[in-house]
Image (cartoon, rainbow, N blue to C red; front, side, top):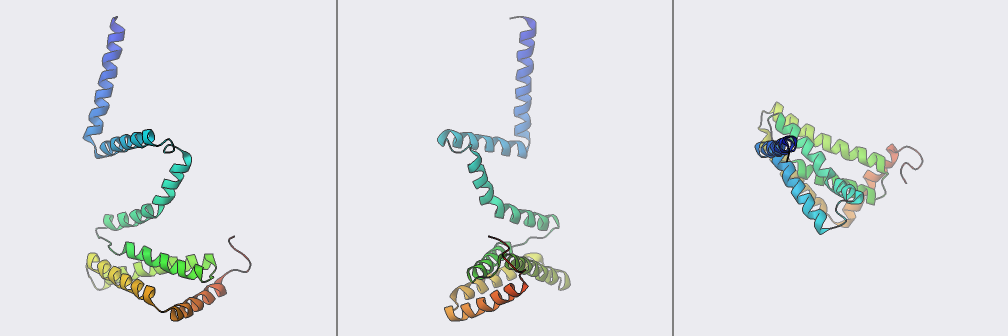
Length: 183
């Protein structure tokens, strides 16, 4: 073995050791290492794991959680904690499903659901700022109130539920642009 080959072997070993030390030293490095090990394990177990369709399915499945995590991250950065976001998401889904299944046009219904989420967030903000109540307590209370409202909506008799849906569907249709929007 000549001197240059031994030097290359030593520098490669130092590079690998330096990389391994950097991975162990940082949280992100350890997270990436665990992700790589889990990905390699699933790639060996299932030949379909490393396919484009699987990554698209994973992305679609995690999109709601990712969007919710961005909102919670903003709340955490501002120094507060939002406990109502899972119930706000649930309420939005329930309202959207009830209206669309009742025949409401998609675009106004989606806008209505976005306004609903924004109104709940505005209510939380007003209660925190104006009344100077801790965000943890406010969001816990609004989340509990929304969860109870969802239970009431789920337990409503069919007749009253269909009357409510009919009224909201008429409002959404009145706000909809003429002609088909989505197919």
